[in-house]
Length: 603
Image (cartoon, rainbow, N blue to C red; front, side):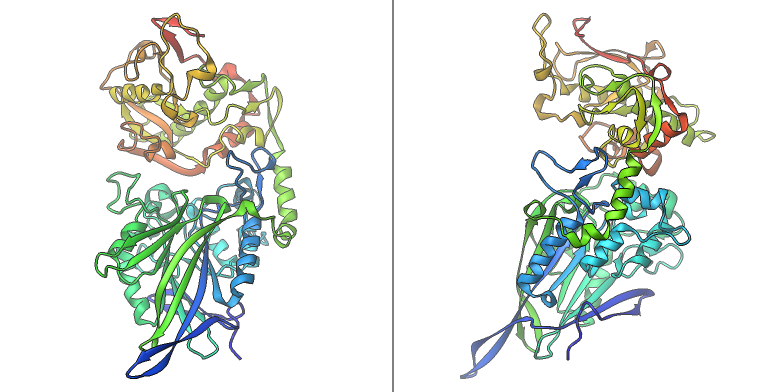
């Protein structure tokens, strides 16, 4: 009787790392077709199977937004979470036959929601007799076969990652996550899965895991001297031939790396950040790549391998469990082995199904505990603050973000080479409905100011560069002649610029003349009451999205990085409110910028 893939899992050693090997059985999709050969008919056997994939789950189990404390929703009415994914997975397994499916992930699993934060920092899984991470519980229950490491897996430190790895019933793969001293894999590079046919002609499916070289920058404090992260193309070229030599009939890469061939870190690393397309193009022997990291939706994308001329299919399901990728493989038995004849990809939308009650029951207690946590009172505010007018006025609630960022960077640079430089800060109005109420402030109130999982960096900028940065930001406003009526509903978002791509910079004073054309709007730019020196050096506290080129602001992505951490800015704000106890705008708020027309304030 063949072994069931879900009940058989053995680990062996390869190149100094654990490698997972799994076997499966039960009614695979095998068919016979008659073929002509040497004057008589010979049977040709075919086999079909499906590999399902998720990526960038970022701690989402439930279709719930812990920062608003209500069910998740967006403009497209997407849903999120593993409970939804579980229902889709069950449907696919029912249709295809469970033994004819695999389920993999492309990384960024344990960071992103207050659920994942809670079990890393508040009730940590690393504590003696600590809990099992909710993502491990959910993914084990759903039956994942393998997952690649994402860069955010390292955010909470290697001990948390290793504990999460220990709690998973599936391997965490990272062929290019190497021990810094031995340069041997620090995690299993690959897993091998055996899909059994009734005729005993197993199909061996290798999953090669690749993670992002940017970890060396983004989580330097956690990995420096402990791990190194060479390029994806280099490591794929090393491992794919080995997997074929070991008898892999199918090779799938799970890559926490986008497909665009671009990098956000300039020349700080010799490796490409978004290299999945390059891997497909440069490394022969790959059949499909599950893409992650870029938070984009790519149902099916073909790249031609330069050496073989064969097409490699790539797919990236949308983040947070909003989509499930399906790779459908058709194999044919010829010359004594299975050969991939055809492979295609598509994505399923999780908003088409209900949450799997098995998963919601399993983690109901953890969910309720975190809901209680986000409603915890962490301080008081002397006044109510709102972002309602923040897109066109310097509001104290945005000053709060900038103040927290600036004091955090100042403390980080204290005593170092750049400690004497002035620290400025950028912030955007992420939501026009965020509120800090007068009186009691909860965790979700503070977190609501920063709905994105951005982290904080410090970049070195000159006065001249900051002037150009602000001019770029001021493109956000629709040119409005002096004397013409001002309608705030039509004043912003010029050229489709979203609110999160308009930055206010604290620590400077300046006017934005909206009567002038874009590129000529910053007037009276000053620092400490004097016109800014174009050659003067400043430290800019900036989120990692902007620092990595998000929004295409000038200079900042190429600027020297002086410091970075992996703590989400929203959690830094929460910690600051807890530490201070009282939020008083009189201590941090000021009017540093205003809109004008010919020198006359608009508001």
